[in-house]
Amino acid sequence: MEEAIGLRPEREKLFDKAVTRSDIKLHRFAIPKHEAKKHFALHEASTSKGALLCMEDNEGKVWRFRCKYWKSCQSYVLTSEWNQFVREKGVHVGDMLCFQQSTRVKVQLYIEWKPRENLETTSRPKLTMIVGLNSARGKSFETMAES
Figure (cartoon, rainbow, N blue to C red):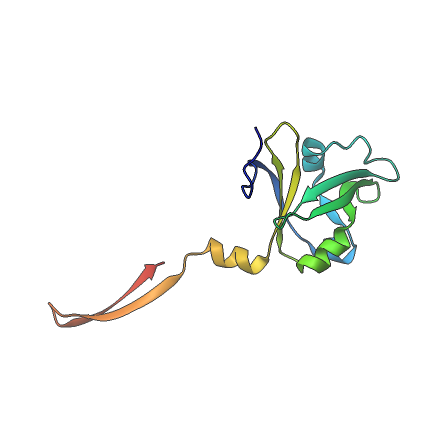
């Protein structure tokens, strides 16, 4: 059955990882080894070229990352379009990258970028101080309310 136009396909979460200083400075994104082995077909990752992983972002743009195994740090890394992704999205240290895949027969990979400031504001409830007068008792009061 084909998807309705404008509807996102069903997705399942693979893993999340916060962007580190070395991900930016070393021009690559390190993927936890156990996550890379579990979720990505990596039979080509150990070759000099690496495996090509195509991932769609929230705007529908497809990014073509190379996934390589770096013996020096003994981890899998995304390269190729990683620098362009960082520049175009404005990725900073502490931002979260969420990796997902479609649940359809033809598997599609997705990459979702969440800026750190959005993570901080959505994870904590907002508190509002309410100050008033209880007219029945003639006393003032203060209370905190979550919104």
